[in-house]
Length: 173
Image: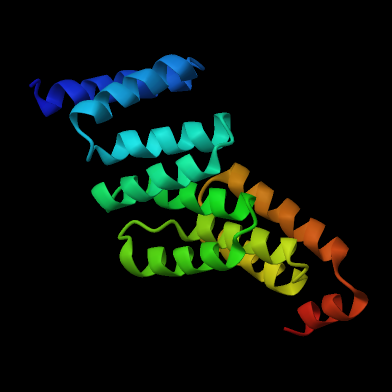
């Protein structure tokens, strides 16, 4: 059996292949890694991403994200990727619970990204004041200028959707 270091290097190659658009080759390499090391959480995260984003196989994406979180509990990527998936398939209650649990348990929790996702869910649910406030919170803790610009655009879009009464409440708060 080859060493874990070899498979870590293989993982880096798979990540590079995926970044370069060679999804099929990257997927094969990830599957080879998991055949030897089924508890390699980062490989599960990347497979989850492929199943979710490239193959629209949400059940397999969920399966791999959950394994990634189980085997690499301090690795932040599967937590946010799982959040994106849950929101995209409309499982908002589950996504909110996942975010709450992640906030309590993940050391390097990205408040900006998760508040943005809470805002996205609130907007989908036509809760425009809540969405505006989440986007505002996301902006407040952000450092990336492009992300801040996106939050400004989100806040403007949501404000445009608000009734006159909702807009007045914002001004009063």
